[in-house]
Amino acid sequence: MLQLSQNIAAVPPSATMAMNNKSKEMKAAGIDVISLAVGEPDFNTPAHITKAAIDALNRGETHYAPSRGIPELTKAIAEKLNKENKIPVEQNQILCTSGAKDAIRITMTACLNPGDEVIILDPAWVSYDPCVQIARGKPVHYHLNDNFQVDEGLLELITDKTKMIIVNSPSNPTGSVLARSSLRILADACIDHNLYCMSDEIYEKLVYGKEHVSIGSLPDMSERTVTINGFSKAYAMTGWRLGYAAAPKEIMSYMDKVMQHSVGNVTSFAQWGGVAALTGDQSCVEDMRKQFEARKKFVIGRLASMGLKTAPAEGAFYAFINCGGDDGAVATKWLEEGHVAATPGYAFGAPGWIRISYAASMEQLAEALDRIERLL
Ligand code: PMP
Ligand code: GLU
Image (cartoon, rainbow, N blue to C red; front, side):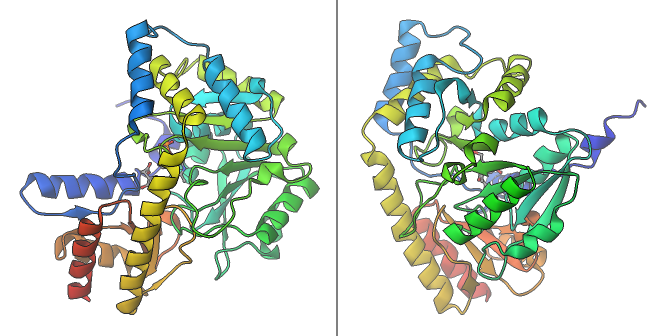
């Protein structure tokens, strides 16, 4: 047999998807499993956004689109980044992608040479390592401190091979938000050592009493930062596969080449949904945020009453629980005996922790927590 790529052989499958698939199999076998394993809003996409895509289809917007995205969408994204995020970018620095995930893959492909080191702040989302590895880079892990913030220890990991630092705030899986002091350390590290930064801000709209600061808005950072965002979480648009990147012009021209020779362009009528999302009434975003906040209070309160410690739940929609032991075994027990699917922390570089998503209905959350309590 011919040997397949050794590089891909070394990449693990997605743990969140594996857990989700397992719970789906159990459901298909008639078992009443509650899946809190995958982070996906349970809301449907707001109607005005869906309507814009349907209208686009009916108008015949069914053809190839420009590789960077339709001008209406790249314009709306550039305006949003300048106005809300204070990131100085022009429209020609935007690339629309098939979800934020694809924006991350394209960033890595455009920026990395074999062996380039990329610093990842653990606990970290499951796909950063694989995206770096697929682009033949080398992930290097820094563990956030006990408050899930960055300290000067990060600097010890920088070598002459370091190319980039990945930042993700609000964080998946911890739900914590990086303070300005952490962002300052990260920005100084990038500036002093001439590094790129990739800032994944997909959860920016889901913050609870905290401010979201884009690292690309800090002085001297926009010229070295690729900002990643998308529509999945803020507008409940996971199935649309619509995201974007904003990058310095020289990186963007490489990213555009990767896009032109792979996906080509993002689904044209989905992009019109994106235009409606960004330029339409934003109250849907706040409505969903408020519901997530109410669920967060409920979930964190119940977990505390069971004596379980959690990371500061300041953003996103995850409760990150210190299970104080073998997280793989705990997740298996919760699934097989309690019929609650959760994701073990080792998948995020955080053994001893377990992640549940509270992007589920209050009824489901209450039932899942009852089941967890009974197991404890
Ligand atoms: N970044 C983070 C931190 C995420 O949790 C997700 C969700 N899968 C993504 C990126 C990708 O989002 P999407 O591709 O749906 O835009
Ligand atoms: N971001 C979600 C999660 O972490 C979706 C699954 C995925 O893309 O990995 O559960």
